[in-house]
Length: 405
Image 1: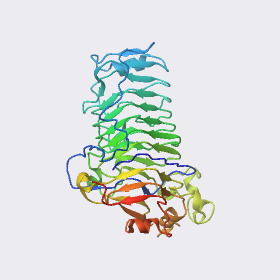
Image 2: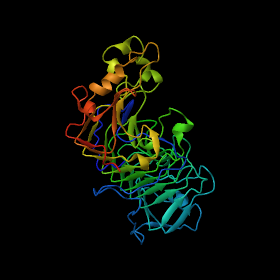
Image 3: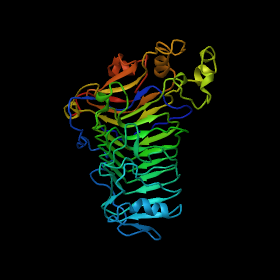
Image 4: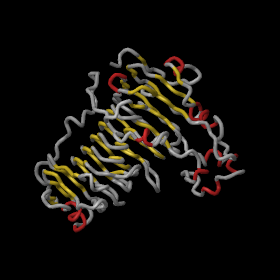
C-alpha cells in the first residue's frame, strides 16, 4: 500500500475501538515483508533506500562518542549535563553487554550521528534510549538489533515528551522500534522490519497530544507475526495509535507491513479499569450512573473526528502475498458483550463510531481491488455502498480496481 499524504486531526477525546486507515493482512508467508517500488510517479517518502546523511564533522561544542569504546554513549550521557549535544562517530556503537543497559538522556540532550554511525543492540540489549527526560533529539542515527519485549519499544522506551526523531533508521528490532510521547515529532525516518510495530503510540501515564508523524517510510514491520502467535491480539502493524488525543500524520509511505499499516485503537470503556481524560476516577464509571449523561459519553474512549483525505492507496495482492483482509478500509467496533451491566452492549458503539462520531474519508484515490468495512467486521461493502447515503464516505474519491498492480 502506498499512502502519499495523510492528515489526521484527532482531538477532544482519545481513540478507542478500531479505525483502520490502511491494509489489514493475514499473511501466508513466513518471511518478513520486503519493500517494493511504488507503482506510481507520485512522490513518496523513499527514506529507507536513501537516508539523509548526518554531519561528517562534530558540531561546535559537541561531545564526541567513540564506537571503539563499549558503552561510551551511555557513559558520556551520564557524565555530562543536560542540553549537551553528542556526535556519534562513524562505526558500530555498542552498549554494555547487559540486557538492561541503555542510554538515559538528560533534558534537552541531542544525539547527532555521522554518516555510517549505528547503535547496535547485538540481540542482547532490550532498549536503546529510555527514561523520562523531555525534549531529547535524535538525528541521523541507525538503531538496530535490540530485543524489546512484546508491547515495549526500543527508542524512547518510556514515552518521554517532546522528543524529536529525525532522519533516523530504526530497523530489525524486536517489539516496537519506537514509542511515542506528547509533542513528539517523528520526521523523515525509516521504520523498517521491526518485530511488532514500527511505532507504538502508547503512553502508560499521561496523554499523547501534539504528535507529528511526517515524511517517514514505514515498511516490513511485524516480522514476529504476532497476530498468529496471539490470535486476535490486535497488537501489530506499521504504526498503532492508542489513546492519542491529537495527531498530525502526513506525507508518509506506509507499505508492505505484515498487518495493518496505520490504525487507531484503545480500551472499550472504563469498566476495564482504564481512565478516560474526562473521568479520572474509574469508580464513577459503574452502574447505574454510567448509563446516563454525562458518564455515558465521558466513560467511553472514542475514535472521533478523524479526517482521512488526499491519500493515494495502492493495493496489489500478488505483492502483498496474503489471502484475507488485505484489502480493507474500515471504521468499526466489535459487538459489546461485557460486563453484563455495561450500557455499551450490543451494537451501540458500532452505531456511534460509524454514524455519529464524525470519522470521515474524502478526496482519496484508490488503485486496486479495495473493499470497505463499516459498523462491524462482517459488514463488507463495495465502493458504491461505502459512498451511499447510509455511510456517506469518500466523497470526491475515486476507485480503479484494476490499477493496483
